[in-house]
Image (tube, rainbow, N blue to C red; front, side):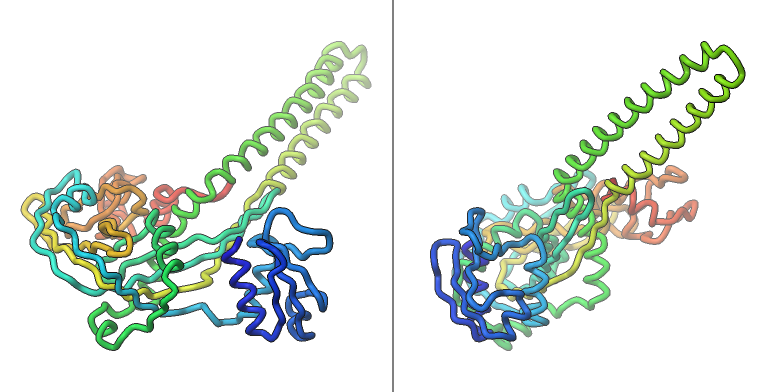
Length: 387
């Protein structure tokens, strides 16, 4: 939590507070009245950033409402930024070998056409999510995009952010670098990519929480079923041995009441374990970076096209190949027959209605054969975050 502690110390000092470190995970803060009101702090506060905290200390972390209070204090500051990094790293000596590890095309072949230095623009987006059911989970999920090649950064994100945090030299891009780098994508194009790429990544990120949620739901449902099954069994026995009509009517009414109660309890369980998920974009960083760009010729049957992959000097590895439809969580890409789009396997799978395979990049709205809506395809392709 050292990064959060240092960030809060800097922010509070900028807002007029007197801040003094009181330990590895503690800050003593003397805040002016306006700042105290906005953050809900006493005049003299002890902020605790670790798991253990002294009596009377104010816990500060990524949970609860602390982020909301800090967000209100920051306003729009820090929401958008542009940074340039120029690492002195030699280009790869054998780019074809790198491509052999990074580019997997099961239904096409490729050939390296050339490699040259270039500039790119990475858009690094941070999202805050809140998953609320019988328990609550909050956190930050990041998504990276190379605006020159269309590549998405997944596992590389954490390493990239660590490298940026370790470099204290924040450089504003020079006019020459901005001219050489690609222009920012239109907001509509970025939003379309985020809608396609974020749900499967968020689903994978929340998978442990969802598995735990389902286990608790199944446990409570099984207990409820077992309890009412015992009640039903006993009432059915009494009905079978009833001696007169009055007793039979009474036990029949009891069975109906047990069924109604069971249905009502199931509805309560569904309500209790229903998942409400909210996602908010909180920050965008444009990173201007010199790269080594590889031009790759892709051939599929009689068609061919050239795509670009960038070697990132901060990560010292090639970016993943672009994905023009689908989640793109796996390394392999399929090449479509019509326009040679690079997609994941699901984005060229069969239509759920007519069974005809088709490319979702060529036909994003509906199946070209039967007209089945692509919205149902998206649900099947990306999965659901519902319980």
